[in-house]
Image (cartoon, rainbow, N blue to C red; front, side):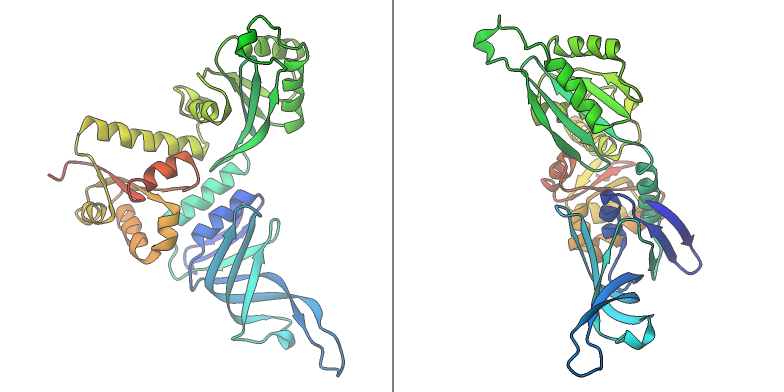
Amino acid sequence: MRILKIDYKTKELKVVPEINDDLWHLERIIEPHDLVSGSTNRKIKPKEEGSKQIRVNLFLTIDVEKIDFRRETGNLRVTGNILEGKPAELIETGASHSIEIELGKELSIKKKELKKFQIERLEKAKKASTQGKVLLVVLDDEQADFALLKEFELERKGMLKSGKTGKMYETEPVRGNYFSDIIKRIEEAKPEKVVVAGPGFAKEKLHKLIDEKKPKGIQFFYGATNSTGITGLQELIKAKGFEKIIQEMQLVKETKIVESIFAELGKGSGLVEYGFEQVKNAVEVGAVKELLVVDTLMLDKRSEVEPLMEKTEQMKGEVHLIDAENDAGKKLESMGGIVAFLRYRLN
């Protein structure tokens, strides 16, 4: 995300989304009745009789009524009534229209209130877009699994079989180009950092070949997992020491925060509250140190949840908005979608 302007006086943001994750952030920042300005196009019918409709480029400001993000296609659309626009002679004020928010195009958002967690989300998006690609590789002597570590999710990038036919043939050698093919797959992904892990000795063999070939422009790190596949990838991002490798990646942070919540519950310390009413009570008395909210709950019940987020910040607590589609978010959803880590016990 490129941030062009944050004006606290006028409560206006100007940004340029650069990657698909930026659209995910913007969906959570834009609210109903924000004024969003951007370029769009619309079909109009010329005044000349018999003329066909033509599509023209417009610059519009709309009063937002609906925000719709399609993760699978990477499309973010905001819909609302037109307040003003250019060219003025083609604008029908008051009519409903949608602006498709596109990568690389400037967007202005004017809000009734500019909230701290929204600014922090913008700053995280800005930082994430400059961190570079991180590729995870988990392997054994039968298969290698690949995934890009994006800010809010693991993006699977396929799997490579060694050619070994199964554990009943343990003496069967791995075909000679298996490890070379893994390195080729890594180079094709063009990452800046690669984390290699897995059970057994396969990762050591790959490590040795990487040291010999020395792929240019890539930093390699090494860890250990008990599994391959998605289980191994999830195990890797939870592994002790992994956060030191990629400290600022939001997915790792979210996983660690949620794991600490469950660890605290296991201790029976009384420092965790979950469920809306229980968390609301903890927020109102100023006892919340960290508030975790699943993003889908915030979007579905924004008028109820956002006041709790704002009050937590006012009381010097931290707010974490967790993606419902990753492992951490699914665990929080099983607890009602909202959890508070307390400064002190309430009972």
